[in-house]
Every structure is written in C-alpha cells, then in structure tokens.
Length: 103
Image (cartoon, rainbow, N blue to C red; front, top):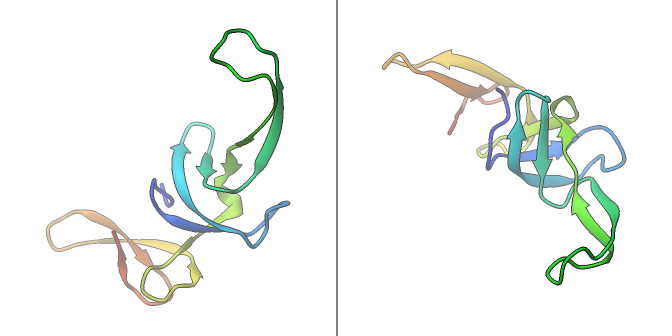
C-alpha cells in the first residue's frame, strides 16, 4: 500500500482537486481512504433516539487512492512512491523525487 494512515496527501482529481489533508483511515479492500476535510458529503437523518441528532449532517466520505498523491516530508511536494529494501531486510517506501525514506 503506497498510502498509509497519518500520511499527508494531495487530491489530484475530482471536486476537491488541490486540497491537502491527513489520512484518517485506509480501506485496502475498496482501494479507498478517508481524508480530513476532503470529500465532504451531506446526509439526511431522522431522529431515532435521544442521542442521535436529526437533520442534515456533514461528514467525510472515502476517496479513491488513485486520486491521491503522497506529500514528501523532506521536499514538501506531491511525489510518486517507490520501494527499496533496507540493509536490515525490511521493505521501505521512498520518495521518487529526492530518495528520502518515508516513515
């Protein structure tokens, strides 16, 4: 998976193109991610219990991973992600622009 939880990403397609946000959840089976402040939808809900609020509620909806680009911490630009095997045998994500290992 090239994008993981707590990564900073840029939306490159769709109605929220150009927005940046932090990944809250990743759904690998659906190939989607939930980003803070991106892809806000309105849902209409009925009051079913005393706790649940009735009316129009705004919430974030998942967005496809192909519409996202990872933002490198070092060069602070949206970059493609590559993989590299480290000395200890672990597989790590790297920035294709600057070669920095992405934690």
